[in-house]
Length: 183
Image (cartoon, rainbow, N blue to C red; front, side, top):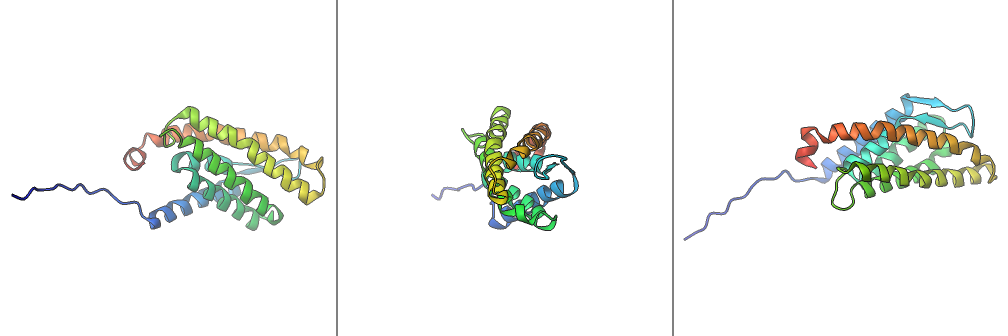
């Protein structure tokens, strides 16, 4: 007798699908940084922009690798095309680390961005790393360990605004059929 085996078809995750999602996330970070920003009147000319909220959203919804790439590519590209070229290396490093940290914590303990407490913790713990990398980058650029201190308040505001926007957006998106089905 032959036994009948039943196979259920599950949609395989492909490298192409992952590449497309990562590209879309990077584009969203870029657009949120480029077109929704406010130049600060203090510090080293920093910006308050919604790119940080998109970085948080990307990392929480899609994990550490996509969060790191979305932040690094999206905000790095903004620096390159937006007239902030000198900042691009610092931005790429700081935002890659920030996206990775947020995603790693949000996707820890078997959660996949489903635990609000871990999502907030990831964002909060990523902030000092982002601020430290920018501080060191500015200290090197301006040959001063004092001048970069003026940018820290703006960095803090930018991250808090990003967190305040990202958490409710993630809560809503996690309830959609796409995230219930695929992730």
